[in-house]
Image (cartoon, rainbow, N blue to C red):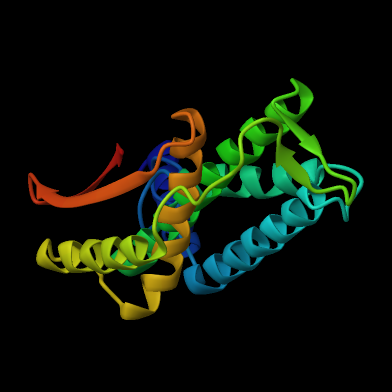
Length: 210
């Protein structure tokens, strides 16, 4: 056996002991690493989203002087990083998607509210709370309707073979209500109605202005 071939075999044996493939990737697959401890990560994201929403509520109610941009940027970065990683388990993936969707819905609402405040369409009252300048704010959607839409969406997910835990109902309701706020604000304050359906084997939610 010549020396170069012997050296190659030795290198292959060492690679095998170290768990490295000849292509230079760790054994177990190429590309994005699998997320470990997904539940802990999701619990932290959910807690931080709840905390961020609370800080924005304080800001819009005049109990916080500055917009919580640092906390918002940190959470947004973590969500974007999480979206590029592989999450094991359909239930955890669905939960991450729900959290990400809730964040972006809130983010759009916060951005629009701040812009309306800066451009004079909203103002702060004597107590510091943000108020619509000329139009009295009304509920964008009936609460009972949100409850029914959340239950219908959960049932639609189950019919498509997706995870459908009754414990998800509160977060679904919160997401739908936040979405109704955004759509109603952009639609001149009109009320919103949600229509739940199954299309192409996937649950769909359509918002209709009344």
